[in-house]
Length: 121
Image (cartoon, rainbow, N blue to C red; front, side, top):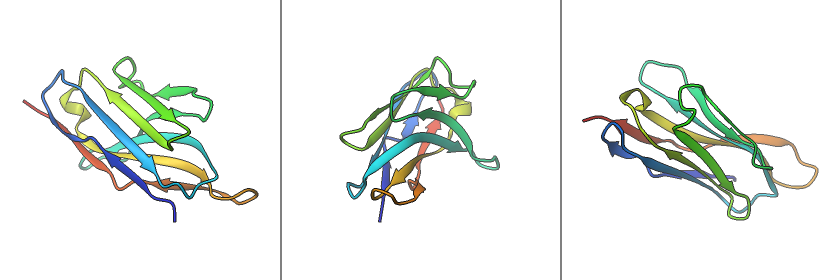
């Protein structure tokens, strides 16, 4: 069973920084795209950032210039560096990975359990 485990959330003041990490279990053949999503109370889950296996990145307009997504294919990890945080960044953050468990098998999406980020003074 593939598991994704996030860490790094917490409480930070506006203008501060946090670094989220997501580690996947090692029973994986290949990880494709890795994403960070977030969901604020009463709102739909939204895509924050995506990184392909080759390292191509894409960001939501609301976080461009402030957040940076990165990955380590050898360690099966994806990170999200969040700078200049704003109160509107407050949400539960989730990582998602497209995974091929074995050669010739189907690609499947897996989600982490989420980590809370609260930006408040």
